[in-house]
Length: 137
Length: 137
DNA sequence: CTGTATCCGATTGGATACTG
DNA sequence: CAGTATCCAATCGGATACAG
Image 1 (cartoon, each protein chain N blue to C red):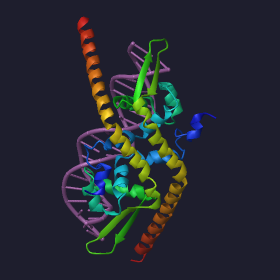
Image 2: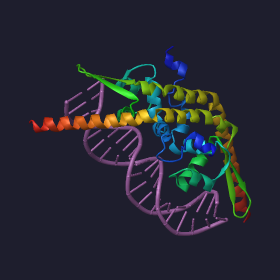
Image 3: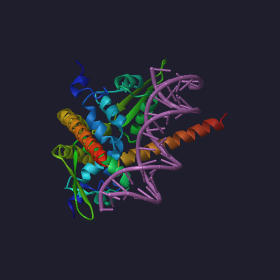
Image 4: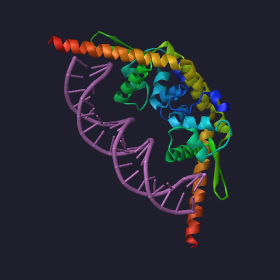
């Protein structure tokens, strides 16, 4: 019994622990869930709220989240049409884990940017070394 | 000041809160970090530990995590060559949020599968209704 | 063993225009 | 407003072969 088993084998493709990965391994799914965490929103509201997402992709994302039972869709028979999306009870249980990730981001975002800068500097240094080595031949 | 601002605007593309999303929104990155959480591993070990990942993609993922300063790479000048990957201090701070997600998966995996089944049944019902409607014309 | 390089099919996502 | 359909470019990821 290795410690890996305690974690529930994230590594096997059919393992339930991969479900969360499947869901949140989608840039937009996370943002959409987060955007709905304050309450129901309409399709157009989400488009404007979330920067850089297209209608098509938003719809796709919402459909997927519906499939998972994380988001519910309520259409009103009005003119003009109105459709509201909201988190289900199940979906709301995901808000806290996601919030934890954004908190991590806020806490460590600076460190990551620094690491990227250092990495870039290191790469540049290595590239310079390569050029020197090449020139020496 | 809306409650959204408290969360730090996950919605703007240049917001630091999106960093975690950028990192996590990669199926393999999560699994790799999780795989390294018990200690350093070699490239080949990771390939066999993680089911379904190719050498190429593993290398790409490791490079990206290096860029973020989450993973360190230690090469030993031996024959045969040996390379070990390990989480950095920064990388280790991500283990707990990720573990939280897998715990969520284990707790709610069943509910999601149920929701998918219900959704499938609902879709089938709707498809049947469509066929009926079509037949009535 | 640890990568890199190349080819190539599959999938993604954006723009646009159109329906209800 | 909400959503679909279509086209199209770009990226992803797997397989294979090759290099250090």
